[in-house]
Image (cartoon, rainbow, N blue to C red; front, side):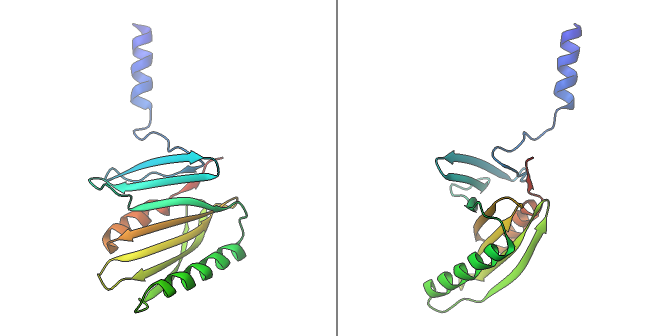
Length: 154
């Protein structure tokens, strides 16, 4: 009986969300699901809006060299590449990304279809990460909410 009560107490006191896998603590809300894959030099989080077959958001390691200068370098290169790929040169905006234990930059391209392509490059003070999103502005706002809460696991 004592063992049963201890087990029940542990179950009730345990967090409702299991800790996220990999080197980052990512906690999307219940409308999202997440997969994690780590093979060879690939570290990939794929985050899905539930009821979707394709990831709405991917997050990968860009480089192990974390510095503000490197973030600016990658962001400038990304903007140049994406502007070349688009015929009409969609409008884009740059924003800062801060929260949790991360900081970086976000570039958002507004597409003629009304959707957006958003790319963020941020550092957790050890690693530079890249996240890519394609979808609606409303969904991006949801995703940004949990991105800003990302924390590096110690």
